[in-house]
Amino acid sequence: MNQISPLAFVHPEAKLGDNNIIGPFCYIDRNTVLGDNNVLQNNVTINYGARIGSGNEIFPGASISTKPQDLKFKGEDTICEVGNNNSIRENVTISRGTASRGTTKVGDNNLLMENMHVAHDCILGSRLIIGNSTKFAGEVTVDDNAIISAVVLCHQFCHIGGYVMIQGGCRFSQDIPPYIIAGKEPTRYAGINLVGLRRHGFSNDLIDLIHNAYRMLYSEGILAEGIKKIKSELQITPEIQYIIDFVSSSKRGIIR
Image (tube, rainbow, N blue to C red; front, top):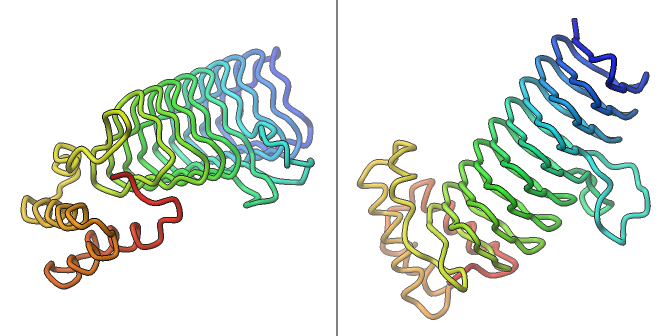
């Protein structure tokens, strides 16, 4: 049975699972789906097009599936998908998609800290930690296990690799490849995310291999030459292939 405050509004067409707690002054619009065991604290807004999984906790002032802040948006029928077991803190805003992709997606087991923004058509993976007041512009992709510190500004269409650590206050308009620390001003490569990789169980040999891959990549003036050197001199594990594929497919170029 759901516990819905008499001071909350739930549209008759909204679809709710079981054992949800809906606090006072929450607003749940039509064309929304909420799974099981979610906690919506007071003053949470679930807008048209939201598809929310189970086990999430959403804090006061958060607004999910908001209308995109994009002048090209003409009211097309789009959605915002949020997975399971996320902690979405105070005043977080997540826009729904536009005609470009149709969907904004947030995975599972993420911590989205206070006042951060996820714009239209972003794709966020799982097990992310995203700091206070960080802002993602439209169509940003973030792979699993990234840690993004507070007050980070990310340009539209950027791709952030998995297992990265991004220093607080960074602003960037190029892709950030996996397994690294990005920081300083302007934002650039600052070494391997050694502590993060060890915490995720990467062996010393694998960490050394990743470090050598980036040494080769950044020692060459042309990235294609660095990739060629990696392929010819290093063991191609799944992690090294991930780096190769990420850099090779980058449309905005990677930070240097």
